[in-house]
Amino acid sequence: STESPTTSAPTVHPFTGYEQVGGTGAGECADKDGGLFSYAQYNENASAEDCAIKCSGLATSAQVGLGVTSSSCRCYFDGSAPDDEGQTFTSVDESGTGPVAGVNNESGENWQCYRRIAAGTVEPTTKPTEVPTVSPTTQAPVTQ
Image 1 (cartoon, one colour):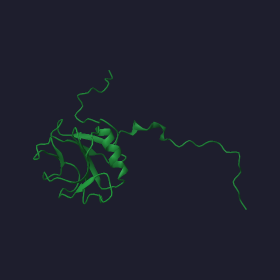
Image 2 (spheres, one colour):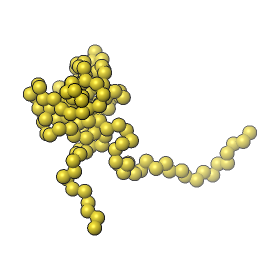
Image 3 (cartoon, rainbow, N blue to C red):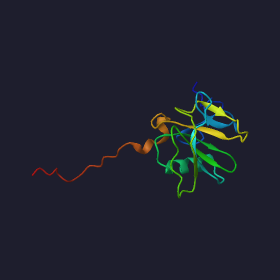
Image 4 (cartoon, helix red, strand yellow):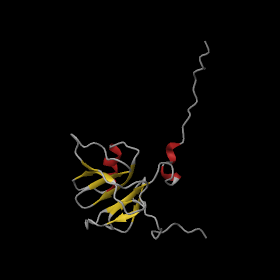
């Protein structure tokens, strides 16, 4: 008997490219030592999906995760946060390094943490249309 996966799976994938870390509102994303990551913060109400879009707009490979509260969105980085001069976000540099390993709620702000999943490790079925479509061509290769 083949059973379809249930919602009791240990890992929550609320949207492509991220997985929830810790319980709901459990704290900011933290490294293996509980250290907080550098971040760029947008002070506006944003769903986790909206926050992910904002973070992807920063186009940096050092992004390790994101955090949301009811009024803010944070994009977390391994290393320095992007320069916020003239931007719509504010940046704070912290000491967290490596991947997101857990959460830290020292602030008491009850952030919701999502770990960024490295490209290629998300379920391969997320984009079945990515198969290259090679249409037959009527042009002969130019060999001059």
